[in-house]
Structure formats: C-alpha cells, structure tokens
Length: 408
Image (cartoon, rainbow, N blue to C red; front, side, top):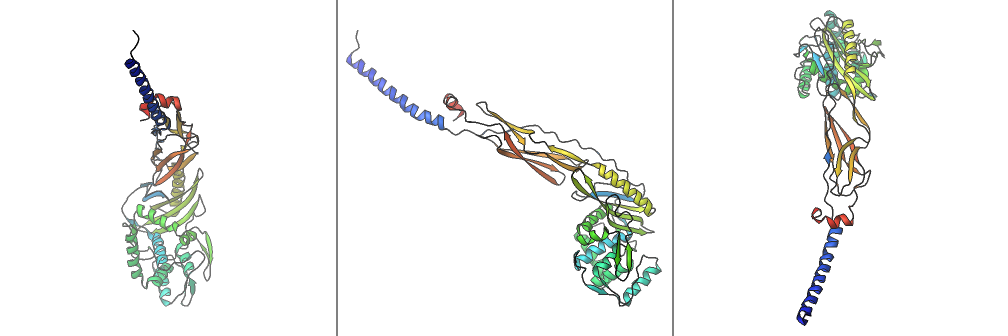
C-alpha cells in the first residue's frame, strides 16, 4: 500500500530536520574538535643518582690542634686535636691588622698616613727586647707609612711595631684590645680573645675553627693578602725584611702568619692556592702547638697535598643527557636533555642534590628551552638549561575528530 500524503510529509520533515540537525551538529563539532586547544602534558622526571661521597684521608699532626678549610666552603672541612681555645702567639697580629685597617683603611696603591715615632715607641722596643720578643729597630723622630708598619708587623713579626700600630690607631694598647675583642664578637669569632696586639701574652687564645675563619677574612683583605704573600721586602729606614713564614712560595702557599711562644709552641696559620681540574681552590688551615717550625712546615706541606687529593671533579651533566620526557595521548614523544656539559670541583664528602624543573608542554619544537636543572653542592648552586629533543606536533584532524573525550 503506497504511503499516504501525511506519511510522505512526515518522512520529508524528519529528513529535513534530521539533516539540519546533522549540519548544525557538524557545524559545532568540527570547529570545536579541530580548533580545540590541547592540554599540556606533564613531564615524567627520570630518576637521578647522586655521585657517591668519599671520605678524605687526611693525616693531621699527632701534636697540638690543627684543621683545614677552603674559601667558598663553610666552616672547617676536617680537624684534629682539641677544639677549645689555645694560645696563638703572633697569629694575634692578624687580628691587629684587620682591626687597625677597619679603623685606618688603606689600599694596595695608597700606603696611608705617615706615622712619626716617639720615645714611647722606643720604650716598646726596649720592653720587647727584655722579654726576648721579636723586634725591629726604631728611634724617636723616625717616620714610616702605615703600610710599612704593617709590613714589619706581619712579615718580620716585629712585636714593637705591632704595639706602635695599635697605640697609634686607638690611643693605648688597652683601648686597642677593647676594640679588637668587640670586633671579634661582632664577627662571630667567640672563641678568640686578645689582651695585647703582639701575641706575646699567652692569654691571647683562639680555636681551630675561629682561626680558619679569621684566615679567610685576612686573605680577603687585599692589603693583608699582598703583605703575607711577600717573601722579601726592602722597607725604607729598616732594610731588607724576610717573611718569617718559610713556606711562602712553596707548594702554593701564599700566607698567612707564624706564631712562636713557649706556651703556644710553634704555630702556623696558612693559605695555599691549588688547582683542581679547571678551578683554583684556596685552602686555609692552621697548625697549633708544634715542637718547632720545620716540623710544623713539614706537617703543613703534607696536609696541603692530602687536602688537594680530597677535592675531585664531579661531572654533573653531559650535553644531550636525558633528565625527563613527555609522551602525548596521540603518541608523540620527546625528551628533556642537558644543554651543555657541566662539572664542579667538590670536597670529597660534599653531598650533591638535584632539582629537575621540567615544564609541562602542549606543542613544542626540537631545541626549545623546557626547564632547568638546579644542582646544589654544599653552599654552591649550579644551573643547567634543559632543552627539548624531539618535537610534539598537533595530532591532526582525524585524531581530533575521533578522540573528543581527550580534548574536552
């Protein structure tokens, strides 16, 4: 039986409206799927293993107290013997130099004001001779620059010039001692106490930790570091002065100060520059209570060699090394790789930590910067750029049309 007019009309209406609905749906669906923004893909971070720490083998002297540190490394790397304050003898003159230079600053090119000596200074000389202290000649009316007084005090360890410098800067040696102890407290060197500018008083004491910190401050001062690294110097009115630190110029040693006293033994606060890999390491160490200076010097040379061996080059990254990766829902894959080689020189047991900061990605081309590596080693931070290896492309129309749930 042929369809009625009503049935034909209904069928046509269904077809028209159905087609219209399909057209309308396609008009919305196609642009929505084809133009929909892609969600970012989080990186999968690779597991990273830190280089294993190794313990250094340092042979500290069996006598006294000793320790070693390095510029850029907090505190003391290793030490042996008592950690309590001990007499420091003429190492005290490093405190004198730092405190006077804070009050009366000079530069390596400006010798500072001229000091005229008096009968008081002759009295300092006579008093030091009477107690067998180290001296350099002086007479009333003699004139000398602040720099040359520092030269005599630090290189020749002249006690009378230390007293003259302190009284010139602060009025009396007692006033100097008050200023010096206030400075030591302000610097956090709480185990260090001075009663005079020379160190001939055995009550001038310090600890290994404080002395290493003091040594770092001394070599950071350009005037002091230049003086203590000088082997010989012709001082006007005095003549040729020899540095009492016999190690200066040997095994990289460039300072800092000797000390000798019955109650303190033979002492040496030292610094040395050594090359490890492509870096220069500045060691700062101290030996207290030695039997004599040749024995102390031999101990220091051995300690320096062992400390240098305790530093090593740690490879952090190799250019192209993978640290993270991405895989998209449509099958594209790419990796985050180190943009360059990097390494660091570390003390043997310094831990290394890594934070991998890889971006979330949508579309990205090969070579794009995609994050950073932040290595922490002791108090040092080393940053290395991450770049993309591979490309994350648009998935294309077919994938978009057939995977709407992954788009919305």
